[in-house]
Amino acid sequence: MTRKLEGKVALVTGSGRGIGRAIAVKLASEGAQIVVNDLDLEPANETVAAIIAAGGKAVSCPGSVTAPDFAERFVGTAVEAFGGLDIIVNNAGYTWDSVVQKMTDEQWYAIIDVHLTAPFRILRAAQPVIRNLSKTELEAGERRVRKIVNISSVAGLFGNAGQINYAAGKAGITGMTKTLAKEWGRLNTTVNCVAFGLIMTRLTGSTAEGGTASIDGREIKVGVNADLLDAMERTIPLGRGGTPEEAAGAVYLLCIPESDFVSGETLMCTGGITGI
Image (cartoon, rainbow, N blue to C red; front, side, top):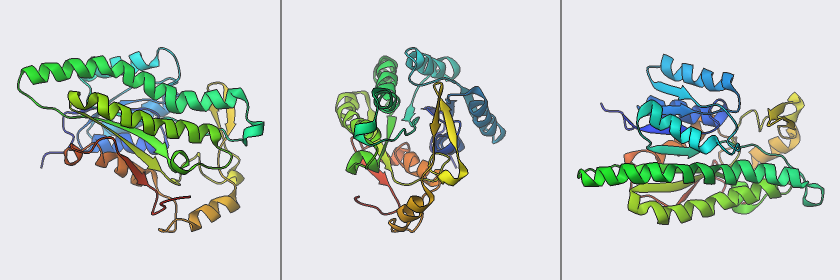
């Protein structure tokens, strides 16, 4: 049986770890050729190796998505390595929380840059490539649907105390999604969004584990207070946080041919939460 994404070329930011890695592995399992990105070379290469070991194709494009030259390099890697571009998943991100009166400009801009400016730059860089590919296919009488999946959060839909920067960035990505769905429909490209609830990764584990992440030269504390984490899970109708693989499944739904007429939508992947 033919795999649903056979021959497609997919770019996934933040795919060395967590949800991004699960997305890259899932898309590769269905035949997509993957450009893997992570801040650090080692986790990016580990994802590439896992995909290749399973019989897939992948290359790495490490580096910060917020770097001014990253978008062109990322898109260029896909074209150079695999000759095309079919799927973009804007997944990279992290949180740096504080209440509004204590939040610094540095915190604000760092989170807006990674969650909103970086996807904007990547999609801007991708547009000429997608336009030219679409034009060539149209002239040849072919129709190939491309897919953009942006990652949002329930914080962007409903707000979340202590996360004004993150919530603003994630709300912005839904507006970007709806706008590009209107601009890129003529290019046979769907643009959708997945808003995650609580997904269990290193960024949402218990703070009792004392984790930090080194991001652009900053040591950012990661994790959620254990009591708060327990309370959050109790509010989820399914009774637990989701796994990275379950999160990847929601993204996959918007990448397969069955969703070719779905565009401009936000799919909530929350275990049943419909509001906060």
